[in-house]
Image (cartoon, rainbow over all chains, first blue to last red; front, side, top):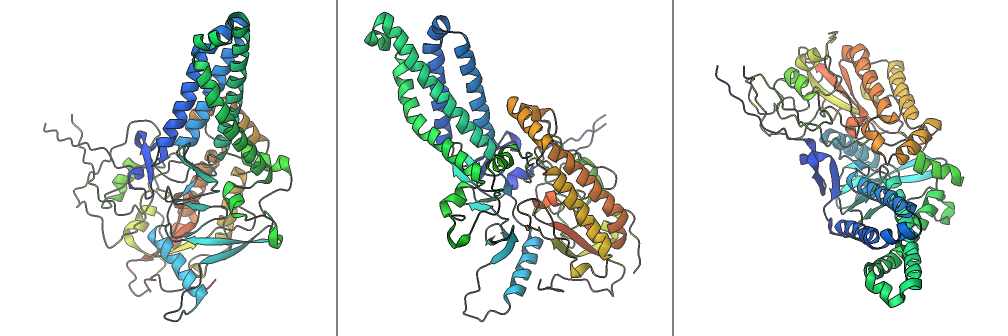
Length: 385
Length: 157
């Protein structure tokens, strides 16, 4: 039996996402483009901790307590986990509006603005909403073609609108937004603790050893100590300060972006409508609220062929989180050009009658009904017997 | 033009997309996910107001349930923090569970209520939780009906 098998890796949606992000591990990891400072952060943390484990820990474990290195290891693991989680996760990127939605919003704006005389500048695109008895202005984003939800902002480095945008942090190589703010905070907090811990035990170690061998000899025996103390000293000032600043922001339920712009500074009687006026409640909302799923479907498979929706429906539905990509099975021999007459044919993703794909963690959803300009060739796979 | 679309596949094959209506978010309660229940005029002749409002209100309730800050969310948060968030490799977050419920609900609504009227709701998660997109289909057979292009009703809201 002739067996023709052409298996091509299906195109996943992350490959076609606009914006200046880099993706790794087939869409599982999402970062900003410039990662140099992130590597520096990694190097500093791993390097300093390695020196600590190499030079100080053997001495301290013997002379003081073995619990010291154990706790340091736990703290180190926590810091690295929080850093990687902040850096690799979707901060809360809002996907850009598809053409129909963009047109719909344009129409609404034109209707609201009325007739603009030629030569006159059209009024700024702003929507006013009332939140908790406060008027909040929603701005229109020309890049993403949406009215930004409250607290969202457009990051020019990543070229995305991010929900509850805090700031773009080059040290973690990613934006800090709604989805990863708590990991960022826990990272700075645990890093402060780790830095203080290492600094303190460095001092203890030097003191203890100097009693036996003398100060200069101690430094000769453990040269790493000097380096560690130096790094920790400068780190403490910056990271502890940052942690304090973010603790302050959390207690007021504000973002760095709002703080910098002075949105709720109190002049003109403008107050923060999102604050519960209670420190505990604010902290709970920021740190203990449910983890929001990503609305950016990175690992969904792009549908290229619109000719046989029923078949591609069945095959494309099962996008699992597991590593093997699902190859599409198009059994029809219809042309592989998207049908121009029905550009927005409701694709299988919406409530497909027979098969329903499970929405697995990290917000993977069935392929969006209107996959834009997908012209990658479909995969034809005829099974061999 | 009283064609019944019981099967969603039938809907796609025999009807052409005429228009899309977008239900926007309602921000009056803050940043929680909530959609406006205001009935859009484009759907005036297609579906009863009460049915539409029921759908949107149920969706709003689901989202409120997902985003509720209470005992369960604290527990989930603390447990996750203690396990360095590795626990999410094994279990689903509460939000994801509710999103699944929402998916099922929308599918059921589409099959029972909206498809027979030539409409189709898109799950908001596929639009970044910004809008509920309702696709309006016109029966291909009835050529007399206005293939409502997007310029029909620029309703000044």
